[in-house]
Length: 198
Image 1 (cartoon, rainbow, N blue to C red):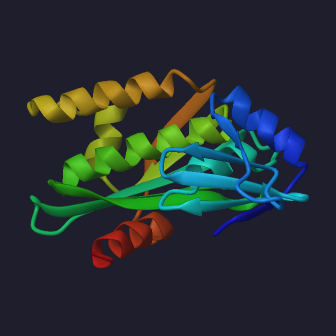
Image 2: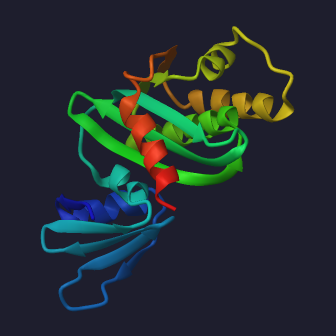
């Protein structure tokens, strides 16, 4: 359960500016409450406690950090190909790992899981406020398709590539590179942990 030490008035305004509805607290100790996706934020004196299945939906909006550039690692995993699948992603700036996440995404192929991980990682990077992203993944297929070096006959993968390219327009600068699994270890671990935790 992340706890963010902050000015709760500024935090409330940051959430409100992002379109998050703010409600009064449930007790005398709670200043206010907010919900976004699967995350709930509760403000107390000098801090905001975030809970829920995906707290990054709120923590990314509240974490201070002047970093506008970061490395974004992504990985998808499928057991059976197609089979049960999950994704993992991590955002690294000069402050270290500033956000990460994982989730099960149902039954799909490994390539589709890799694209789903990249989409979620780009959404998180945008929510965090990054303007420049260096994307890193261990799927050569996804990297080369996004760069335009490889084509695909699979209509679903073509659609996902278009979605990724649209998300990339939100950034001032981006790059994408294939890295060995050892370099992508955190995202790989998160995806596999999500698969293991049924």
